[in-house]
Image (cartoon, rainbow, N blue to C red; front, side, top):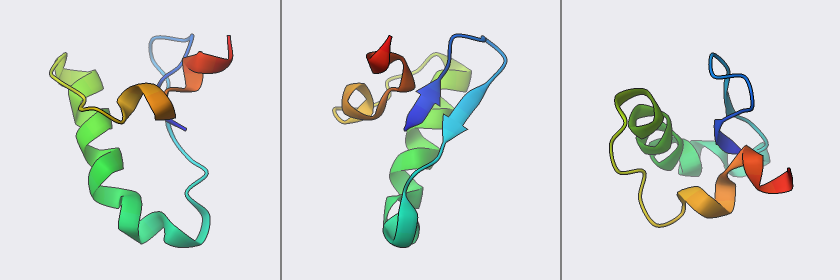
Length: 53
């Protein structure tokens, strides 16, 4: 899960497990986009923590 939560002051970048170092650039891109209101990229919706609500 990578992205904004229901609390506007909390962001998640968790659950990458053993391949976390491979996903670090993607996580950084998505979190940066959340903070700057920029484009998160094509995979952001698949990793969005709010998709479970």
